[in-house]
Length: 488
Ligand SMILES: C[S@@+](CC[C@H](N)C(=O)[O-])C[C@H]1O[C@@H](n2cnc3c(N)ncnc32)[C@H](O)[C@@H]1O
Image (cartoon, rainbow, N blue to C red):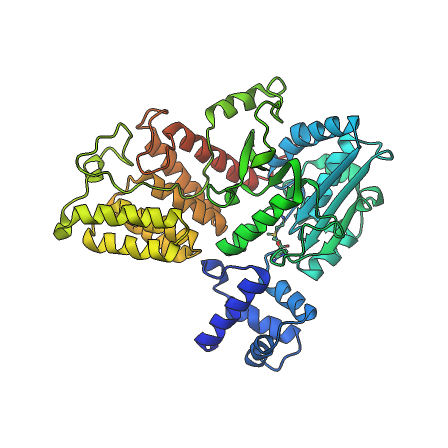
């Protein structure tokens, strides 16, 4: 058993150097990983290894070893069908159309590319859309922190598992069968992607040298979910600087957040959304998505207002004299919108919750948590206060604490729909897809009791219809990831 303080120091180092967040339960095997990394690095034991890492800044070789053992390498071709559908049907064709008329240039970055499946999937799509690329300058860069992943990406030889969500034509047209059920990507596509080491937690981008500037599309999926909130914010802000006007950033559905992307707008497609730097959205320009081409998507867009696939923010419970037409989280608990008088101090509890929310809005999260805990101390049975605490804890990257607060919320009111939704998102981030699906089911069932245009009282103007849309989209994407459905 490693001494607690050494573990803390190492976790801190890993957060600073790689961006990883160790608050979640995904890292319970921390000691095993350290022991394996120590062995790999040739250290006598884990203790000696940690000491070595802490004594001086880790060398690039040591960073590589750490990355190998502490990053998650899970990917496959055409992962998340809806996103690739949007790229194939809208994002890339629109871009090609625009660029056809001027510089015939396209710049794409797969950040956190793992073993290359994501970047090659984009190269394959582009090959379908633009078979003759001679007169074009197309750059697809793919970067990762793990040197072993990059080596495998460059070899471009894959097993069946890399095709688990992939339509058959991909293998048929773009791979040759090798030994032991392996498939080798044809050279034409392999040569179109440039792989390179890049640590997203370092400020080395955007940069012309690494082709991580003036980008049209950045795809960074299932990476930010492992980062601390602060680091994720820094990465997202650098991405913004790396994108050119009208550029788009794609993250995974589980990483969509109403707070992480303050300087971006959402561009919606069927079953997926992209982020676009806010200034770049010129209101008079035609939308990227041609509504004529996609009537189904048009309906969806009409229904969507602002997406918030995250714990929606809450307003503190209304004061007794306030009247609101907004619906409560549950009909059964409507009466509880008015704080109960347990502890005899509900007025000040509401005020404390209001201050907590204000502090959270300013980014003073520790202060916000303190105020919220005081509100709870003053009024122990108000589920809305636990829910507020959960949103703050989630922002602080304290996922276990957020889960606990959400469970308390539900203990006090099992029909608190936003708490079910928040738990669905947290389970999704942890990769507990079945649990996430169950929570989403509950969300949708509870929402049936309301009218679509009713506003959820504890959210920032989130409507019942909108939340149902988001829950349905997430549930569908879970379903689709699970069944390795044919593509196209
Ligand atoms: C789960 S994989 C995602 C792969 C692919 N984007 C997808 O969604 O299928 C996460 C990748 O992020 C990489 N990664 C983790 N921390 C990183 C960092 N600080 N800089 C760059 N890449 C990082 C890991 O090495 C891993 O390859």
